[in-house]
Amino acid sequence: MNNSQKRMRHSKFKNTGILFELLTRQVTADILAGKQESGAKELLFKYFKENTELSKEWKLYSAILSNKLADEPKAERFLSVILEARKRLSRKKLSQEKYELIKEAKEKYPLDDLFKAPIRNYRMLASIYKLFEDGVSEEVRFNINEMFQAKTCIVEHIVDKPKASVLKETEDEQLIDCYRRQSAETRLLAYELLLEKLNTKYSTVLDDDQKAVLREYIYNIANTNSLGNFVKIKVSEVKTQLTEVVRKIEDNVARIKVTEVVHQLDKVSPDKIVKDNQIMVLLLSYELLKECRKQLEVK
Image (cartoon, rainbow, N blue to C red; front, side):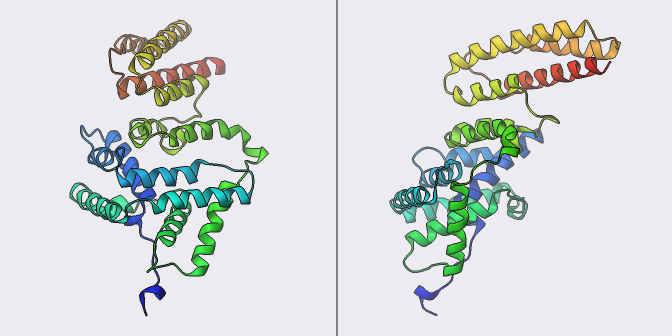
């Protein structure tokens, strides 16, 4: 079988979209495990920083994942533009960066554990990988049926319209989309708060106050003055609301615990840099407020 007839297989190790998703997920796992340093975070900052070939290719993946167009002709034209941009990337640099990334990841984590995690949008990421590889390679191509299925999957995703029955859910999805459009660095810093539709830390859907905190965090993470002032205002608001609620709590133990949270909020006073844990405390305070109000309504 000559090179032009050789059949290529999809590879998680070479799929930039999957590499990014698995590493960001590992960052969250490291944080929740209480690790002081995350090897995955180091890898993301190193290999997905601005101007790396991996970062450039990830932006193309992200563009396909986040854009929605009205019809198939527009989707086809959009994909043509994306493929032209993909062709301009250095195959040599991209291959080298992926090789070095996997090599370093192997030193920090068991690769089998890292890559066995299920990926919700695996089919889309695999389809994009096939589209890119087929578009830039003259020697090795996927078979025609695979390419047809891959392109069909991508086009259907791009022109997919939300159904009326799920319109309520789109508020959280819009927040996810705004998050996905950010740079790799911003996504990494916000990821621990957004994993799995923002419900990793919460048993209920986020309310408007929590969504506002997350949006501000994502949009202004580089604008420390704006973010710091916003956090101070929100801390003051939630303290006032918790103080009002605590007076109505009859259970002494519960009242003491809520009062302690109010005191802890005094320590959330951002200076020049807003820390991730300060955002988390603020979000959890709103969650506590929500839970207290729910219990009071039951009574």
